Amino acid sequence: MFQYEHVTAGHLDMLKEIGNIGAGHAATALSEMLGKTIDMNVPSVRVVPFNHICDAVGGDEEPVTAVFLRIEGDAPGSMYFMMPAAEGSRLIGQLLNDSGIDFLSNEPNAMGRSALNEVGNILAGAYLSSLSDFTALNLKPTPPALAVDMAMAVLSFGLIEISKAGDYAIVIDTEISETGSDNALRTKGHFFLLPDPDSLEAVFHSLGVNENG
Amino acid sequence: MRMDKLVKVGMADLNTAKVPQTIRTSGLGSCIGVVVYDERLKLSAMAHIMLPDSTYARSGVINRAKYADTAVADLIGLLEADGALRSRLKAKIAGGAQMFQFSSSNEAMRIGPRNAEAVKDVLASFRVELVHEDTGGGSGRTIEFNPATSVLNIRTVNKGVVEV
Image (cartoon, rainbow over all chains, first blue to last red; front, side, top):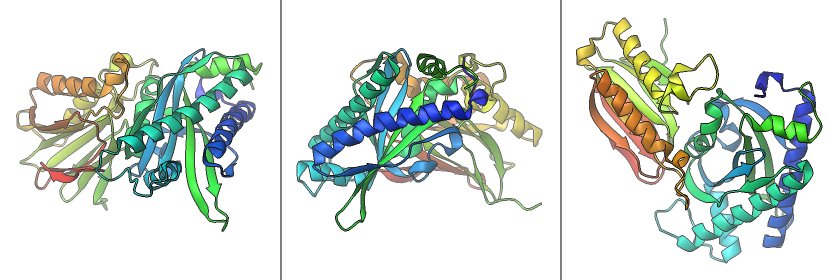
């Protein structure tokens, strides 16, 4: 099994490239869906202790919309498309042309939830298929599942496999955002890719990077 | 020695609190927050466990706070070291939700309910009385325990706060 302590700068660069390629394709897909320009920041790749895993999304208790799927195949892992709940509500409101959508309210809102699930599915599919092409690994997403809840409560589920091996996760985080015509930041979303511990070796191997980076 | 009023317990972590402190863990999803306490001495200990059993561990050195069996044993040990009596110990637990509903019924997806069962089994094996249980469902929880009153405060995003 690949040890996190052995991660080198070369490994991290390779994982950044994965975040770039995957989220880049997803951002294009979202941009086509919304008919708007979607920007993407430079991916961050960090070895994060579990207790700091939610820092990027505003803390453990921050309410978020999260679409989760497992990646099956040559390099299993977990994937999230996560937004602050207010942003997720606004994004789906735009898509459905319904400004009343609020995922934090107790209304059932089946239509909004189904739309959000589908958006997550399309974006994650775009992310993974480009990643699969780049690495020549067979990566298949499970059907997506949706939760609107505290960031830590939803992210911890994706850490279960990883937690059997240690208290750290490799997080490949890419932020995408929509900039409005007035230059105000509109929508901000995060792709989190959490490779299972054994998957790093498969990824590095298929990209021709050896254990020493 | 100055004590922080609020003791925080992270994921796969445990700690103790005594009056006037309170002890808290946030964002429980499929994880379980378990608090064991001695009402008379107003001592408490809390863990945020992720997995049912330490046999799940794949590495040699394990973080005992992560697993139901080892974490509960350590909570009891810490309280006893502070003078608590085993026969007086009581427990309250919360968490073990299923945060995502999946179409396929994969056993790994049921980790929340399995965690809850495991914690209850371990408490029973130590003969610690389980006074309150708020487990299952589909909501994340943040909990805070006050050893002065033995009240556990449970907060969810959609249903507000309950005290048990």
